[in-house]
Image (cartoon, rainbow over all chains, first blue to last red):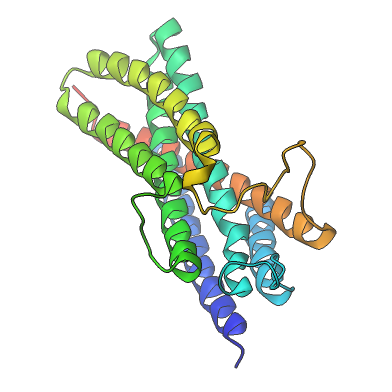
Length: 38
Length: 225
């Protein structure tokens, strides 16, 4: 397989990981904020 | 939620385009393998976001000194923290590029690398000094003054010093704009590059917001004395 494609897949996997991590923090903060309001 | 999906889709598209299109560098004139120049699509936006964050930190520091409102101190330190993270990312991608083109990860006679090293040191000192002061008000005041001084230094170290001593640098110059201020990239390269710049900025805004919300939540559970 072309080296460019391999690097692209690795970078995409890293990006998906970062995105899901940020999404999880966002959700957790929203939950804390809602609990705090109520 | 829609803008988070947009950031995800835009960054994914930038990554795919960066690797699926021809290299931004002409192989005939490239130093080392032209394929390595694809890192330009990520390295330059990371350096841009770091500079943006340091300037943002300076703006909030000025506002703190004017109003003495602690929320500006929180905003300034959060921006500086993220600026440091993006500066480290830019340094790592820059070192990878240096290894693949100049043969070494780090070269002490390379003015770009030395200037970014000084930048990382001064922001390291900023956080060390912050953590050393127990009183919240004196910490905020000292941090604000340092943040203003360091942001000016950061602009000098990133944009001015490497151009003053261009003879000591192998770093590609005029890669975004040429000496006359015109965009020096082809249509496809410019489209990918400016999309990357926009999506990295949007990602910074999202992470910045999350950081501020996290600080607020932490303050509620563990209020500072």
